[in-house]
Image (spheres, rainbow, N blue to C red):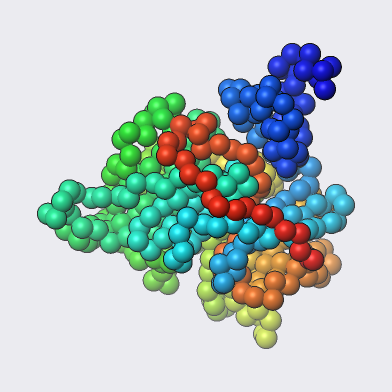
Length: 390
């Protein structure tokens, strides 16, 4: 211990940030100097996330699963060892009413309640913050609005986390407007004191599915159309403006589309189209990629022109991740599976025994709301993690 404490802070930082997340939590109680290094060193979180992302590139993928009964489980799959584990999150949320998960980014989870309350929490550290409610106008004479949907996004170049709320003003119901809340305290281009601000307005040309959160991918948020045309609404997080909507990819040759969804796969937006081939339900997966580069799912897509590229077909399941061995982690109503496209075979990894309500890519991290500049940070009552039999 004494020998370790004699190391320069930079060396200790390199050692600690390479430890598993749970071990870093334990290191906080070893000694005061280690606790101060984890809690206060300005480079800790960026170095920690960098090493964590490198670990993810080695073949580890993980997800946060929410059941219809509002239970939470953390699923992790290691492609190198072909091993998987399932852990149950037992934590007391800061409210008792029903809510939806909006998204998970770098271990921070965004939740939204029907009373228009947005919450950002880190399930592992038990810390959370309740965002101020969005108010359009002041007092009883203020302009009322109808909430459409919420999205949670991230700008990696500036380390900014943003919650985007889409709404319709009752005074101007023919428009969709956007309000953005940026976590932070002046380190980015907007201070937290500015809170919600209306940024972006679009003439209402299609209907959004109110029950579904925005999908974060390609450094933007996306919402699917709900009137059968299949278009996708795009909100640019960097410029904070609506882009031109995306037209859907090609439907199956006979046009017998059943339904469609959008989601995120390796940081890229995907579009899934369900249809029947005889009695078999299939799902075509299309990726929104640069037109000249459709190979690497992990490569960040930031530059236009973008276009849909056919990727693969699944047997009626939604994709979660593509493994290093080219398998596809996917899910259906109540189970997680891995699909071998070359052999056209699917293996069930986990049967939850209950309907899956939502599922997001998620990794346990120590990302701190305090380090991001948030105030009034609260602590959940409990955050036990139990191993369960996969």
